[in-house]
Amino acid sequence: MELKTTILKHLKMLFMLIFITILLLAFIIYYKLDGSMFLWIMSIFYLSVYLIPTLFIHFKYSVISNNIIFKIDYSGITKIENGEKIFYENSKIEEIVIYGTANRILDSGYREFVFENYFYAEIKLIENDPLIITCLFSSKIDKILSIYFNDKKVKKVKLFYPLIQKH
Image (cartoon, rainbow, N blue to C red; front, side, top):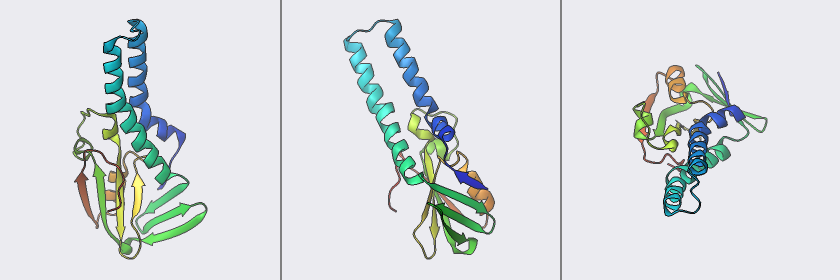
């Protein structure tokens, strides 16, 4: 299975943010809220809770995922970055760790924040630095890795804000 990021996948991840932004702007235009205190409070809340955290995490995921293609099969993972191919055998994979919000890890249908759809997988290797595969490659990366590497330990870690960190 080949995984790569596309504009469509970026838009799919940002869909809810775009939708909420359009609703907020329509609300402001319809009710003609010209500089009212309610508009300022609503705007600051929206910026601090929805827009800025989601755009920040999307940017970070995009930078990490840029110009990379993963090919996953039962024998291992091939990482293609800027034309350079590196193959990691299944036997060299130590464990898979999925990082995401509690709602995403538990596959809950209800999410309060837009950034709760973001998650990533860290594939710990025996001899090399870990591989990071973000949800920008596939929104089902956790299930894909579980299928192809069912003999490996899959650990799920719940985070409030799934920003990629050095672990």
